[in-house]
Image 1 (tube, helix red, strand yellow):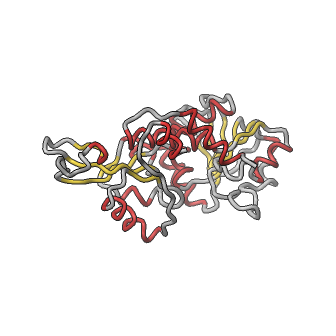
Image 2: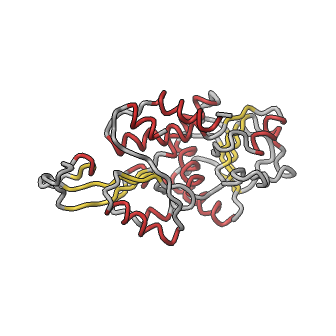
Image 3: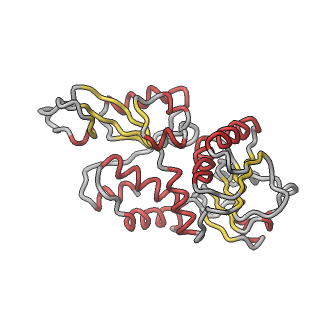
Length: 280
């Protein structure tokens, strides 16, 4: 989607994917900065690690507690920080200093996707969230900020879910939050785990403790495959479903605007995603 957007706006930019082990994340960020990258996206498992690896945190990263977008910036002679791409390529206007700034575009991406793909507003809804990692934590805090009626958190390692629950109770004391499965129906189930990326993956929830017909709608943040085992089971149970393509689109569009300072061509980006995900 990014390369399609660059082409649509006539930008001589290129978006590339790199596999980086967590222990090498600092070196990878420093290397990208040294090579004059405009920025980076980070995915599992780097989003929380990056909080301590960037020089500055945007309000979005501070609010949601994870970094999925980094922008490389330079300080001009006037003392102002600007995108590296805004400095002259010939070095005539070289920055006097450089820094990395971390952003989070995941949280707003999922709320927009839920409205568009499931016609679902979050205020007053009962939600079961699976996963309390980088994306799960940001989503949990976003759900709380959107004033859901009740939030249930389930994670493979319960201590992580406990930590997120404690943070929510401190920041949003009026919201009932429970670690564990709900005893009855919910309006929305969200999968923020990585279970479903591989065909042999087990379902991310215990069906004996929470049968899928208890969820009116199921959202899987995974977008490839387009229909995960969870979504297939949810469809068979009669639930409304959506995958994470919309979240991917909107978090990506926000990152595009952070790097370029230009409005993202959403239609072009959505078309590129759909061709990639759904093309036979």
